Length: 117
Image 1 (cartoon, rainbow, N blue to C red):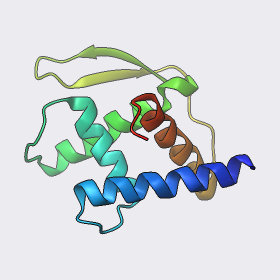
Image 2: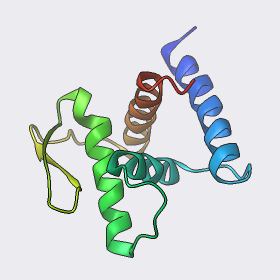
Image 3: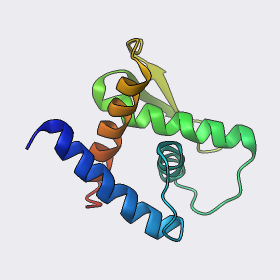
Image 4: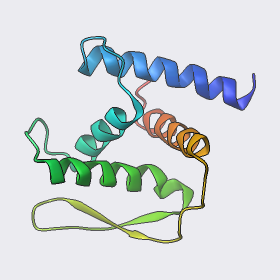
């Protein structure tokens, strides 16, 4: 099986499981899944977040997802318990489709590492 086909199949399984668990079966999109990862990484459970906090949650998720690729490294937790990352190397300039593939690969890997499948 090709790498792209395997990724597509894993992605579809992941979206279905997360959508059933968090969205009553309505398909979650990439941004929604990144947001969920941010909430998971913050580790504060169910809470209501302000708009700027939601953006920060997505940033946390992106840093966590791209950490294994060498782009970010965990730095510290602030006094409110929010994780902070430092940039190790600039992200490459990717086309929109390439960015999507990179994020899907990173997300599938993240969920494999926490044995979600």
